[in-house]
Image (cartoon, rainbow over all chains, first blue to last red; front, side, top):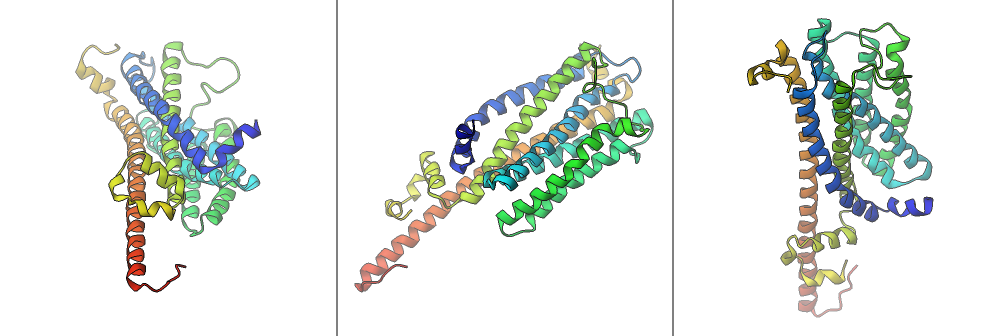
Length: 260
Length: 76
């Protein structure tokens, strides 16, 4: 397996793989996101207690799950980068950080918009809410630390260590609703036994979660390609890539070809 | 369809503001991330072309200078 996987650490192969996967994730993600939103907004039944306000769940839960998934992915990439000294892993790490920050932000804001009508407050210093806010700061910290170095290799190492240390926050977020008395409700899907939700609400919710995963994967592929391009912008394979796409071939004189 | 009319759909049983705020923000944030990533990629690929054209001009100028001087200037 390692023999098969290893060539993808090379930026050129990695870029090509992203390029091949990108259309699939983009199209599937976009279509499923639209279907999921329409399903959740118009066709899922309303809640007997919360009425139609519960429909926020179809954005809130996918974004919250994705925030933790993105952090896990970022920390895994940081680990690979630190242990095996794979440069591409650091690029994947920093490509994931802004996406993770954005979905965490969305989960916090949608949570506030749900909390206002149901709890009567936009914000409460509750264990789940606070730990999720810390997750947002961790994402922003990783980005800020990465940007504060001029040398990308050093930046990757420093931000990678921070990403790994911050992983302690993930179980705290997940179990915060059990360990402390919180305003936030307990786990509905990811728990022992059956999910405590009727199937005609659960199905669109699971659909929305999958669609957010696909969309985030598509954005990640693009962001990783950008990181690779930024680092390899003067390397021959990038120049050949652009030539192959026939963008401005007229400007590329034949004399330069011998030099690169 | 759970709603009787389009107005009822937008009202969301009185929770319209909160529901549409959430969906609006969620979809907008995804669109922003996607759009900015796509735009950066386009710009980076254009930058490669510009850089390449610049390199070509430098090489041509250097060659022209060498031919003109006639001295065996070594490129370093």
